[in-house]
Length: 629
Image (tube, rainbow, N blue to C red):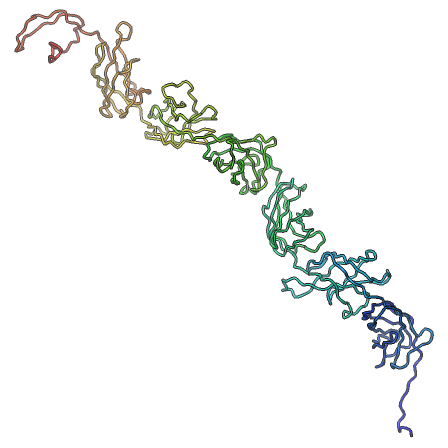
């Protein structure tokens, strides 16, 4: 019995295989093999046979198809043949081709085991069972998604470069994947496993401290940021120069700036990376500026008080104006002291107290810095600063007042502990005016050390009291004794009375004028003779006792002068000579007529003697009452 309708049956020519690629795959299977053959047709039953295993084939064109090798238990060669109906496999010459199964390659270790998410890390794999055929391409598989071509490095090593991890852009955590080796055209499901490789975020550098340093290098810096890793090959990169780095934590590393041939003021970016490339800087905001090499030449003054505060003029080279806020000086082991920029060769700095230097010696080394961290000493370590103590204290000044025209020689006495013999540039300060002072080495009236200075002219000739202080070291170290010095206008003498007196002296002379200042140092002078007593009565009158003179040697007519301070004698009225005082011989009585008088008084007597021409009164007995002549 036959069917009523015929069923088509089509015959095809023999399928002959010309080539397969690749011809090698691992026992894990999964190798996509491209087969070149003739008489290939698109059928539902198109398949490949790997030895005894049948797998579906994919039609590409009349001469090409592909199929994926199945997993097998052991390595060896098998024949590949093609069927269009899953029943008939060609078996004649040219109908099959040989496919080699080899052991699956294994990754035993990976160095480094982490790298930047942006890729580019060069890794080295320790391997075994790698098929030794240079024509067979081998790849590194990072997880199930990323495949990069590998380079053979001998029988047991392979190197490759990590790919960029294209995960979610919001990912901030590290991502770990297994690393395996696969051959060309291997399907991902057959890649296998291996040691882990961790994709880490690239470092972000935020800042560096200090941010300036010498072109000679050597500045120890701390770099701040995020995503730093503790790697043995960690390094800081200053521009194009790399230096080793010390890991502190994930946000800090420490490194030393390299020397560079750059013009002073040049800045370079700073990054944190690893030599192997496993750590890189994704973004940096840090810059390091190179400054001139710093040099210290001299300081002035070279000594100051133990309590500190001495202002020093420091000279050198390489002081940076752009970083003037970082200029510093240090005395011994003192903390950094901010300095004041003046020029590239000059700055000012104040000494700390001796206690702050943490030194047991009064003489300490001085150092300077452009960044508050790198300290530079003088070339021969000969720039030092010496502290003196105790601090100077004024105990007396003489005189304590003087005319506004200045010129008064003032002597200043210090306590017994003072030693001015090695002080520099001693000066007296009258308020805001200063004048040089000199040490008086043979002044014996006061046991303490004494200096002498000339009071300056008072600005606008103003009267008033000012503080008198002493400074040493060019005005740097000043006493705080608050001694007062009074400026006064020169007094004017208008007339005196009486204008004559006896050579024996002791007579009260009234001096009239204006501008007389009440002072314990008030003195009168009769030419070269100083009055034994002077008394202030008012600003317009003083009283002086006439001195004794030697009539045989001293002048009889002398000028009368007044000094408010015992030193400076005032002027008379304008264009008027000093008032004159005449010394006359003492009167002497040789006879009196009558020589007897009533006890009741009233007897008119005549005196005879010498020097009676200016007699104005007579007195009978030492206790008698003087009566006019």
